[in-house]
Length: 241
Image (cartoon, rainbow, N blue to C red; front, side, top):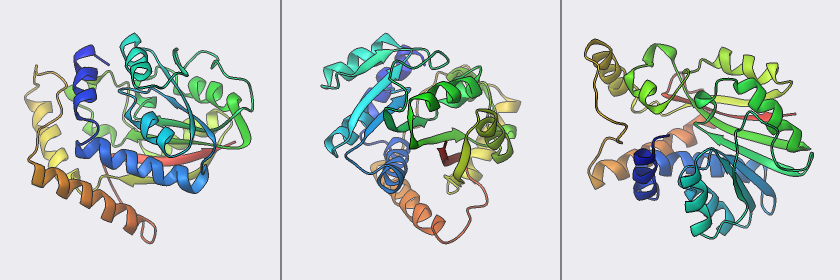
């Protein structure tokens, strides 16, 4: 992640719909699969807003990130157990000591996600879970993904292949963010024809639109409990040992 992108994330993540909605989804899965109090580790902490929220909810939290800036910012928020670390390398926690691992839009940044999943799994208890999100649909890969440092976008089959390749099991896997999918297809298609040299800024929306998108994500999550979501800009899931 570029330093400027992280600075923007620090500014926006408490209120921007994308981050708020994704955190709500991850928190809901944590509550269902890894209820507090429990020790959870986030790989790729970004602006550390997730860790701060989960700490307030009663979790014992720790985090890893490749960026010094992320680690320093997390510590400034009062989160002490954060370290600079390459997720491909053995994780700095005892084996079988962690109840939950969270990887939100992280695996697509890794050259070898299978190795990272193997290293993460070593720290999990036998009943531990990995909660993740990744961007979906390879045909949407564009200059935006390149600027963000993505190696890939995922299909459900590719995600399952990476999970089983790490010796793990798929417990839950579904799409999310179907409500912006049509607009994203149009924008990404345009970018493929006319690549942009702009940075990685999040598209600004009005307060009304921002709140509407947060509400749309909540409705989608509720519907997903009863009906399959056939498409979406991302995949979300739960992995077990």
